[in-house]
Image (cartoon, rainbow over all chains, first blue to last red):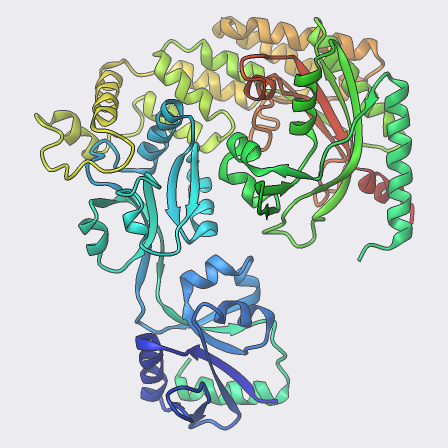
Length: 230
Length: 364
């Protein structure tokens, strides 16, 4: 058995991940053509590189099919219940930064905090007969945050893309979405609540606590820790 | 996998309990395992998604595996409407476990529910006594509360109707309740953004485009309400302290009752609710309940039992904080009000978990 390391298979996230490991002496590269997902890691023996969609890496780590993996901390928190019992963050990689935030229409000048949002949700439900809708794809993170903050009378509606447009389209009253600069939210007439930051995410190297860690994997891991200065 | 003999024992225990409840006059009823998600979501909001399994049907839309029997039994009763009516049911309920893998996700519940009647304290006592005696061979700690007393205290505060409504809405969310209390008492500083909003000549100066279902008029109405609130005098420190003392009453029932009677001097609004508690304890004692060792907690059920707006109770295995209560129940008039579309029926009931009964009895 070798140590299985999962990294994102596409785009900037893949390139930045390759750079991060490369700069520390573990060279990651694709082995075959652009089309297949064969890949190799050079610099430490016994590392098997697996290219995967970033969204699949949390579940693979949680089930123990990967020993190590790079993915967004937001995806881990959203998709792995009791994540900190199954995974351990080893290093924040300093890219892929994105904040999960709650935003409301800019012209809601009376709403600046979650307490305001809660009061508005009560009035909205009385007036319209249904709960104030918040569009998101991060159901667990948003629900836990709002529950802990004591916000009531809202509902989450699923939005897998173009979430910023849902308010204009009147399919939601507010959104909980990922943003790095806030520009897209502003361009869509939305403003982030002053206490609306749910989670600051970035690409993170995680170690699986549930994977099989035999002598061989532990030996490879010690070498990796040296090379990567973990 | 559940070992089949464990399941058979649990079923036998559920049947024993059902027979007891039928002897007490309850009509056995059933409920579908798949319930329309809309009703449950409308009642409990997103929080229910963390507790109930959601599935979907192409024609009926989102469905939930019943997390308990209360809602279907209330709906059934509101359609039939005998008064008074006693029901019993037994079957599996399903609970998602997001944070504790040790807790069961599927277990049996046997319930006893009493609708209608004209003497609520008698109905409360009947339900408690029947459930307690049904598990009488176990040594259990009994605790009770009464959300109605806290509700009465909030309604009696010397403050605006809007503030009382906001506080009542968050009775079941103690953190938000406390935060509201602190703000209405003037103990939390007004945020700078709020000050600026209320001072602005034109609050909509940099407002941006009007988008979504909430209109400019809605925003204007809330600003007017915030202005009115800013001009209302704060809730006094004495009143805040009284609510806090009330919420923290936790003693054996007779001592709790006398503590509450003392509080009536400064909180006259709770007098009728405290009198109801006193009547209930008398009715319980008349049915053989040992009220002297019954623990009363004013905040009992405040975080878990939304819509339970009066008497609430639970029976626990002493020294086993890892186990959920073996028996829980309470009065849920508010639920019948919401589900009855204008109609309202007094309702009180409770459930027993047969698997826990067996576990504590030490059976296989």
